[in-house]
Image (cartoon, rainbow over all chains, first blue to last red; front, side, top):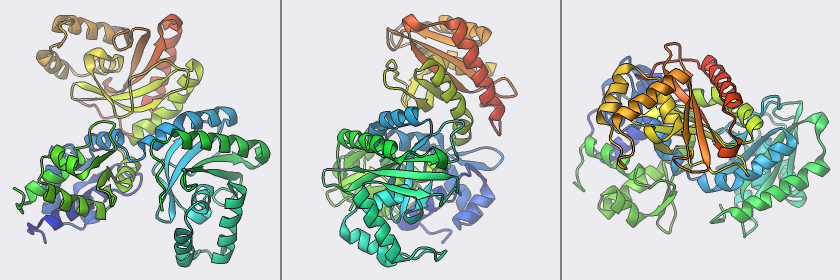
Length: 251
Length: 251
């Protein structure tokens, strides 16, 4: 394997090296990187040197390896979520200005909500929705808002495989929750992640009425005024949907 | 070349494919991607399929290829600029709240300022500093603030190779500009990019007094109150510098 010259395994190794950094860890020692990537040290060293020559990784003299500034630049200047985030940002700023709270934007990826943008304020309540963070559909308001507005086939597939590791939620209860969410046009979750907060999310719909994103806020329990909040968020979500250049359904 | 099985050329091809998307373009047709990457169509097709299997690219049935959501996630959850951006964001929000204008954060990469974060407001003046955008050092206040606080050797190397394509700025004038910037502790550029705005930037210094970043604002000409603005920005920059976990010099 170490000396394999087949194209397949080189692509595989490149992917393993780039994927080896655990969440939130921006640098690794070469030896740890090799171990996490499942590669012999010498193979890893050679690959790091090659990728560093192109700026996809940064390696310093002391054996510390990071994802490269050039890779960050390439991905962010042509981000697959760029159009969505550009469309959403002014509306997210409006919502944030009115509420003075964290606002986030998520897309559905597999059975998880992937948070692609976030505005936070000092003094706002804790919000676990980091940028590039994930949360399972059933414990995030964004996930519920996204899944409640997908095609029947995808929803069925999701419910089919669903099981709650804590056994608190059955597939039937989740089906009812998604159905309520779809009827109401927004999702709300009270204190699942943080007991002192509500998560509220509304779908950003495309022309086929499928959710391409979810706009969410996390607000303190005592400040919650659902009747004022939800219409403001739904208006913002419509604004975002109208500004999307290509509203493809995700299912 | 198309059928080469050496590791070197596979890494090279992976890099060429990932780098082939022009700035701001998030999707390409397979044929255009192959042309831009300088690869035979069949080679490109095979590589896209391999990279898509790992989520580094997304390819749909119609031959449209995008950078993958998984790649975006990997790079952004472990961004080389994550610690800097996390340290800077609360201070950027403070500055934005006070000024109600665009605020940006840049690092030096080669002879350019690379903008790694930006807060913008509707109604604020035009600001060309996009996230993951670049500007040459000599025509951006962020670039000047960064270069003015680098080591003598790096500055000399920069000035040695400098030539202004428009012939408006000599290396001697640029040397004086950098020297003024270092003495004042901030950079200002009046209407170079946009004639109705000022760019103001202050360095974020590490313990060796080298600039690891620049904090910048773009404000309308008529609203400029330098005496109030610069101390506020310098205070914010000091706050950012203090919060950096590892203040390594960049030169």
